[in-house]
Length: 117
Length: 117
DNA sequence: TATTGACCTTGAGCTACTTCAGGTCGGTAT
DNA sequence: ATACCGACCTGAAGTAGCTCAAGGTCAATA
Image (cartoon, rainbow over all chains, first blue to last red; front, side, top):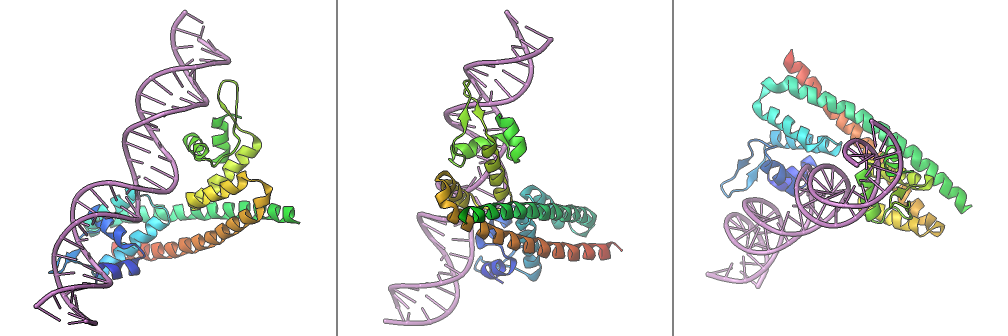
């Protein structure tokens, strides 16, 4: 499929996909006879994973490591597993942050309400 | 109190506080005779709020609007209330994102497990 | 007295995109 | 046939939001 479809399926923007490819985060993107990128289902699954990892705060540095491991094949699965479970722990921390911020906002909004009465 | 204490209390880094002040996000920071910044309790509460808003993804653009309103005094409370409740909705969306990503990670980790067996 | 440590300012550097300028290609309307 | 359109391409420049380095002030301590 073409880049616009890859973008709408993965969640990433077209420009970001091109940027990621240039950065070496997306291995093996085929090209058509006219020079246009041809994304396979596997490509799009990979992009989708990248999208979610970034969206939830994985730094590019780690993403780069993860992508390098992915490019090396199945032998790196234990390392990749390690990275993903570490990220899963980060998600828990983010959820805590959201809860805290929610509490702060609730208090603040209450104070505003009180002022307005 | 001095900037280092304001930093450790608010969560922001020293450099970030100076940057925010330069950007006009922190009104009325007093200075001592030696030119050092003197933060009041109100200053620190405000910085803490800025910290949490940024930490949970409020863009600087919105933060700037919010700060401008804050600087104008109590008459802007309805507008500020509006911004904060909009942000509260964003938090819900972020929580959804975390849940989705968690699901993706769980599936991925399971596949890895299967491969390793 | 000399040095340490926390602060100050200005200005450059960095990350992760994002936008722009300028060009190619395939398909449709005149 | 040709003129235009939209989606794609590349390489370079621009942006957001910090972050760090260089060089200087001042108070307190060894």
